[in-house]
Image (cartoon, rainbow, N blue to C red; front, top):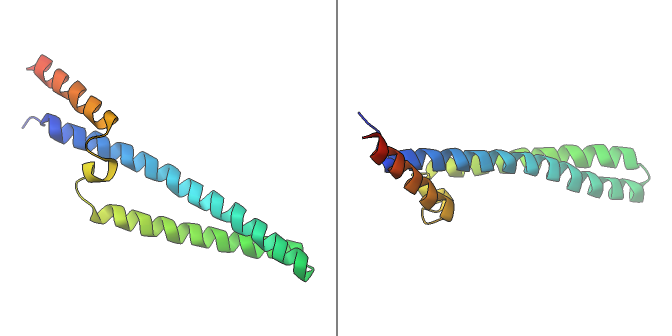
Length: 108
């Protein structure tokens, strides 16, 4: 059974969304560690032990980053099809569909 242009476009859009979400997870983890690490360091300075504050803040930031990433991945799992996530009228989705339709019509 030959895949249709719409199904190929949906697959490519899903891959694009997955790639964007992977970068989102990395940024949540690093951003959480940096933000809460800095806040922990400030609180530690105020309490007299900046090293402990930095460690606690960085661990708290990592935990919150993991939590937010898990919540986001669960939200992605409940939305279908993938085109609803990335926007079916986006420029890249239209160009992908046009390219696939040309490839399918040339290959027939």
